[in-house]
Image (cartoon, rainbow, N blue to C red):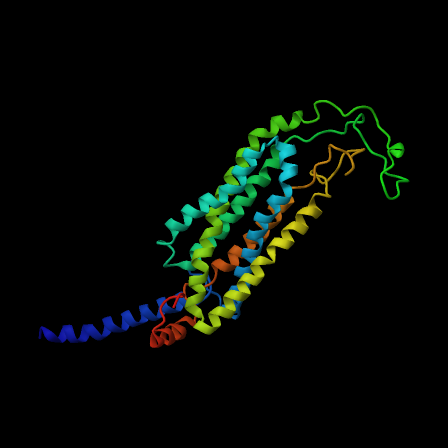
Length: 312
């Protein structure tokens, strides 16, 4: 009598546990977030799709690094920065990235895809912080007494007789930059956050890819990822140079031209555009499952061959 309820109860418990395990396994391998897992997204649930989107996110992350080197002269003039302060901005991401890498290496072993998305959202924040400085900054007005060279008629070597001077160089043109100097800390904060956000995908991304590719496929996939990523450097230089030909407010005042010393290019575009692109890419990356459907097969193959890490 005592064993009958026990025997009749155990199969029911086993069935329920099996259903729960099957449901959890399905949730871990399907695209979606917070219980929302539409079948329409399953067409994107492929390793190569992840590599492409992850690479695009890395490309624009690199772009946020690269534009800064082109904008340095403009930022020094606009915010009255000295060489020590620009050095702090440039080194901030390296310092924060170093410490973040040491700490995050122990926490990115599980839920890697979530850590990758968090890192990308952090990069978005790091780009928005310096871009916000343009909302509070002052910019120079057109000074009609400024020194303006007239280059018309000049052929070959410079002929000083063709240069017209409209009075001596104006005094106090950089007064606005002194008032803008306090915004320097937005650039420092952005640089520190960029180091943290940029290092997180760098740690979790390759390990997530290693789970869904065989040893041979992983080498090809990581090469593709690096190719997409490093394209960001030349793109950042070209984009930054083009953005400096646009006036900082997008609507230059009357009489303002690129030849005038008061001209300030739209430096903030080099931070805003990567922030917008990475923001949307982060949402897509966040939808990828904790484990790709192909990861189970790859894991069994690696265990059979005795391969458990990327290094091996």
